[in-house]
Image (cartoon, rainbow, N blue to C red; front, side, top):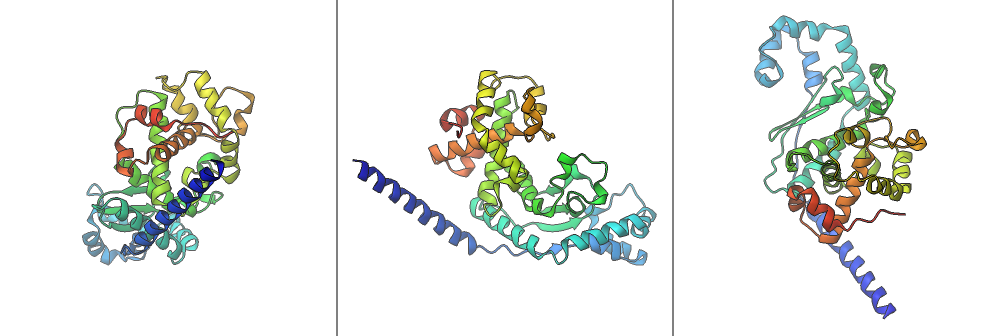
Length: 319
């Protein structure tokens, strides 16, 4: 009986690997050609005389509330010139980023047949890190000045836990998250569990759409932070259950365990050892368990409610 079980397990693994390989081959054959429009460079290299032509090509980039003198001053501003140079020094020919974005688009086209390749436009945003990526049906704006490296001088004064992800390795992950938020259905959040499952959906979306990126990149942790979360997963889960947090409607729980923060707030001595957003991490593991135990299609997951996902996940934390 034991031998039969082993052979059955091996056959399941073999079938799974064969299926994954077939999907990978199908995704590789998808055409996802696009051009990167380097508006950040084009704008700074445009002469004042040619500004009307540029505005005609990119009308959505110029607010009607400002006259041309404002844009001309920006072209000639020494800080903007330095910003353009720093972006160019960091991103160079954009080849690596192009390859990763192309893979992201291929995965989106495979899983969402209605997906159309958008215009990809790079910009600078005066380090508006709350809007690093804006994705619509037809345009994606990438604010490259938010990805110059965690210790870049332009980020002086910004808290370290935020600067951690101001690196170019995060660009495609932020793109995937922007698309995830467009595809995922979210009813009005009422409980801590709702917030955790929504975060878990966002991160599982990345598992599917950018499988070529590490888990640390997907969630925006350093490797040691991810290792801490994995090593303490059972303790985190026990805390959430014993403190009866799952169905709590306390709005402070999002600040403690979901929103960006330097560490999670258990109100224990170990707090400062922990990474922030551990509620997101646990939600991710619940959603992964749900997908493993139900074999649900991705689109069905994105519209499923938190309670159903949790109950059918049969989630057990790693020990």
